[in-house]
Length: 226
Image (cartoon, rainbow, N blue to C red):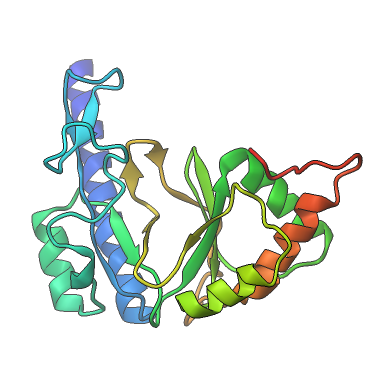
């Protein structure tokens, strides 16, 4: 009996998780006008230590469950009917944001550096929007920018922390409540409840603050080098 009850609880939890992904994808696309698509899912395997692998054809995929695959990134849309069709057929699929265009871009750091960066930006009174976290990386969502603008911004800097990664036009990012090979994707800073559309800081302001935080440690070095 205990085993049957445990199985039922697990099934209810899985149904709730699947519904949450569809609901999130619809919110992002329809309410916030962010183009999304389903990403590659995870599958069980005996070939890896964690017992999971990516559903894509690459047996040695370096980012299992954390990238677009069938459909490709160009299929990202804000169309509610398409989104419901995708997740009705693939309820376990992660929610992938196509960055750029009318959707947010992002600046990401390794998780340890990300936590330090947020603390440093808070201490400077920097206003931030949503922040996405995984066990390995944290991503600060920023207003859309194109590659030309990013190039000009980086060219004007003497240096930026090597740990920074930019998710701009033509890129992608997993959004909560997805699950990838590295673990659960969650909001470290969630959008304000009831927001018509989350506010996003300018990429230049975020990069300026991160560079300042990185180079202001006593004795030199960078607290964002992890």
